Image (tube, rainbow, N blue to C red; front, side, top):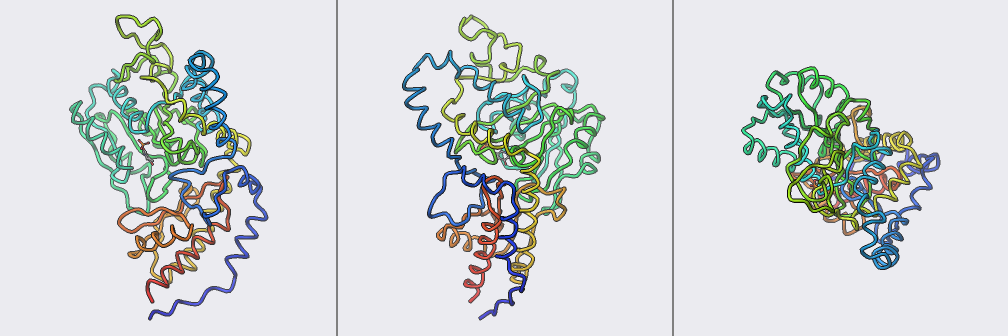
Length: 417
Ligand SMILES: *Cc1c(COP(=O)(O)O)cnc(C)c1O
C-alpha cells in the first residue's frame, strides 16, 4: 500500500474561502441554474452552465415568440438575429465594431467558409501554404487537410511542445512569400497556452499573409481586441464560455475592409442581396450578411444572449482577473496536493500566457474521472491521460477548485491502495 504524503498545513479550504470572500464577482454564481447533484463543475470550457435568465427565455420563447408570433417572428427579429447577435458578440467579447460579425453554423462550418473565402482573395491566391498548428483542435486540422486537397495548397505544420503553444517566433520561422493564411487557436484547447495574437497577426501581415484566429477558448474568458490587432478573420464557439447551450452556433468575424471582397463557398438564399425576391441568380449581399447561408438556427441563439448580458455587466477585465486567480489557485493546489502523487501540470505557469483552464496528466486519470463524475465533480478527460480543469469565472467558485483538486487526490490515493 502506498502511503500518501502529508498534507501541507496551510489549509486549502481556508485559502479557497478567503478568495471567495474577496471575489467581487462571487454574486454572479447565483445567476446560473443550480443542480443539486453537481458538487464542482470544472468543465465550463466545454459546455458552460445555463444562466437562469436563459432558462426563462427558452421557456418564454416557445409560448410568447414562436407560439404567439409564428411566421411574423421572422420579420420582427429572427431574420436579423444572426447579424444583431453578431454585433453584440463583437461588442462584448471580440473588440469588433458593428458590421463585421455574424452567427452561422458550427465552428467547423464557419471556419470552412472563412478559409475558403480567404484563399481566393487575389492578394494571396497565388500563394500555396497554410500555416497550422499540430496541437490545434482536430476539426481545425481536419478541415484544413480537406481544403488543402481541394485547392492544391500545402499545410505547414508547427509543432510546439505539448505544455506550451505557438509563440510568435515559431510562426516567424515558417512565414514566407508562399504563405497564404495562418490559422491558429488563440488559446490552445489542450494546454491552455495563450498566444500573443497581436504579434502573430503583425508578423503574418509583414509577410503578406492573412490570419484567421480560432477563438473557441477565448471568447468570454480572455480579452480580445480584433479591430485593434488588425485581425483579418476569426471564428469561435458560443457554447463554451458564452454559455449558449449544446450545439449553439459559432460566430465568424471578417475585417471591415474584407467583407465585400470575400466570396464564401456556401452560397445560400439567406446570404443573397435580396433573399425574398428569390431571383434567378445568386448575388452576394453587400454586407456581412453574405456569410449567412441558410435559415439561421434561432432557437439555438437564445441562451447566449443572457450570458452576453452578464459578461457585459461584469466586464471582461474583471472576468480575466478572476480567471487568473482561479487558474493560479489550481496550479498551487496541484503542486501541493497532486505533484507528490506523480501528477504533472501541462499548462503554462506564466499567467500572461495562460487561458482559463489548467491541464494535468497522470496515467490513472481515465479511471479517476469516471469516479469523480459519479461524485458530482465534473472536469473533463482528454486522452491519453489528461484532466482539463475548466474555470468559467462567472460561474466557478474558488471552493469548487479546491473540492475538485482534493477529489482527484482522494481518488488517486484510493486507486493506489
Ligand atoms: C470546441 C472547439 C471547436 C468545436 O468545433 P464545432 O464545429 O463547434 O464542434 C473547434 N475548434 C476549437 C479550437 C475548439 O476548442
